[in-house]
Length: 296
Picture 1 (cartoon, rainbow, N blue to C red):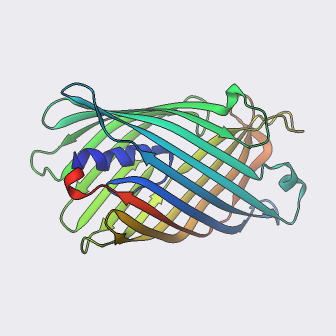
Picture 2 (cartoon, helix red, strand yellow):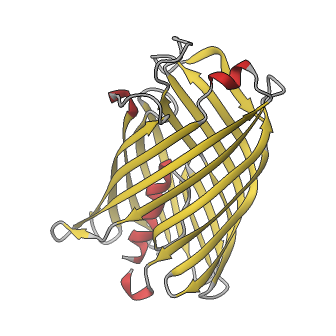
Picture 3 (cartoon, rainbow, N blue to C red):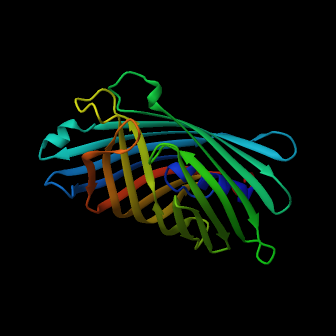
């Protein structure tokens, strides 16, 4: 169960942020400080509040288990210099997600993970529309190596509309854990290296690929039907156990790549509406709850 839960959390973070081992609940505030657009003097800052909950494990026969995962994210985009472009942009975007993680043991060394998702994304102003819902699914087969059972490798595919329409992405997963070190990656989504000096402190570094597509509603620019956002932060992180299962988590670093672009009905970029931003400082702070050792 220990290995399964670690991988469960990283599978969940295929479309979100990397999470720490054994977390079943978290609440975080993140801020990307103002950054200039590459094609103008305008600036944009991003503040977001996100939370998620992993429900208790349900057994489905002898070889299969599943968990429900509920998550919510609210993002506020702060535009300065009041350009025409900033007037057209959405200032607030919300993201609610239901995921179901299925884990099936193929044999002693191989297991299959399947993660279907239903994602609701909105600007909080437009009426509810079927275009606000985005289905996604990922599948990975993991196997542990005979020569080193601490190392696990996985291969799979992910389908989503988080970058372009009907986007299918090959996945490579790596999981390694020793007494003082843990490394988890699902590429191209995220990677995290964590050092474990004792039971109350953890520190390390991580990188995330965060992409999302939102229904743009009925804008004056009729060609723009969707908004695509991209954020790739590279962060140092530290976690401190406060008491029992409660942890305080802090991250700081740089948002390497940010993008706020308009897509047409075919999910192609609208001309002159591809807005890249310069790198800027990024930080995050939050609380989380983790399973105890005997509950993994």
